[in-house]
Image (cartoon, rainbow, N blue to C red; front, side, top):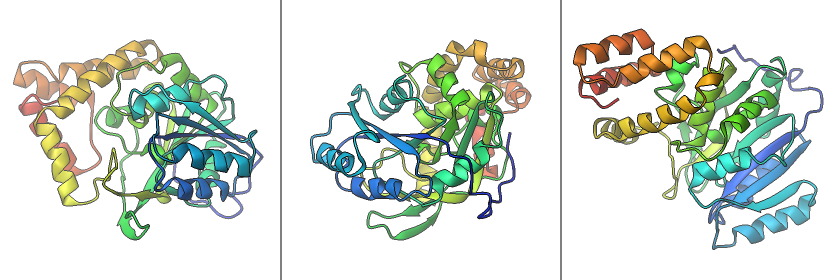
Length: 321
C-alpha cells in the first residue's frame, strides 16, 4: 500500500512519541561522528540510541562512548553484536526485547540524516492504526566520501507491495522507520535467519503480512558512497550493469532461495493472497520454460522500472530467478 505524502510545517508538529534508533557499527571511525551529530540534531528529540558493535578494532567504541557521555547513558546504550555480518547484527538488535519504544529506526554508521528525517516518518506513521504494521522509507541524496552532492537515488513510482518486495527492495535500511506492530512481526520471525539484507526482509515481511508501506519521494538521508560501502546505490549505469550481471550469473537466484526459505518460516503470518503469491513465485523457478513464464505472469511480481522488468523476463527464460 502507499499514500501520497506532502508534509507541511504544521504536519511536522505531532504528539510526543519515543523512537528507538538502532545503529550497527563495524570499524566506522571515519564517518561515525557525522552520523551521530545528525542524530543529535533531529527535530524529534524523544529518542534513544541503541548501538550494536560487531567487533570494531578502530576508534569506533571510543567515539560512541564520547557520544554517550555527551547525551547521557540513559539515551545511549552500546552492546556487542553477534559477529555474523551486518544483516544478522541489525536483526539481533531489532529482536533485543530490552528495546521498547513507539517507533523504531535503522541507522548506518556512515550517513548523515536530514534534520526532519524522523519528523517526516512519524508524521505518516502516526496516521496508521497502531495495530497495523507500517513501514516508512524514502529516497536518499547521494554524497561522496567528502560529503559532496552526487545526485539522488532512483525515484520509484510504482506502489510498494509484496509482489514488488519479492523482486527488489525499494527502501534502504538507512531510511527505514517502522511502528510497534511491525516490530512485533520481526520479533515473531526472529533474528537467526539466513536472509540477504535486513531492510529487504522488513519490506517483504511488512508488505506480505498486510501492512502499509510508504515510500517517500523526498530524500531524508545523505547516503555516503565510498569504497567501504557494503551495499551501494544503483544510480549510475556501471552500478546497474553490475546488478544485471549479478542477475544473470545466478546470484539473484541464490538470494531468491534464501528469501523463499525465510518467508516459508513465517508463512502463517502472510495474508492468504500473499501465501498464494509466494507459491506462484516459487513455481517461477520450475524446469519447464512455459511453466516459469506463466507463473511469472500469475504471481504478479514486478520491479520498479521497465528495464528491471525486462531483466526479470530474461532471468525467467534462463532460469536465473
